[in-house]
Length: 90
Image (tube, rainbow, N blue to C red):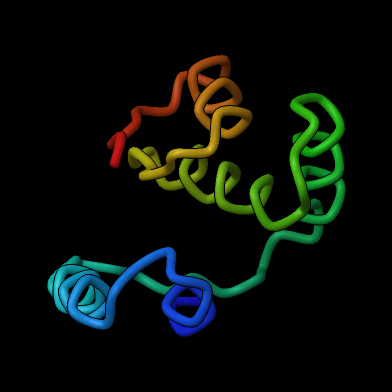
């Protein structure tokens, strides 16, 4: 996605590199899919807040992990606020 942004003039190579550096410094934890209710949760969140499946999954992970999320997407900001998820506005 960064490469597409660069190609479309939305960000520079330097800004992409800075983002990747910041991202690699975060304590990111990868979780497995052990919850069989996950697809139902995703559909419910997506429908309730008018989100894509990708955004609903991002919201679900923040809710599940009790961690704030970073986004500039207005629908996702509103959904996070309604669900009590903290936000890092970027």
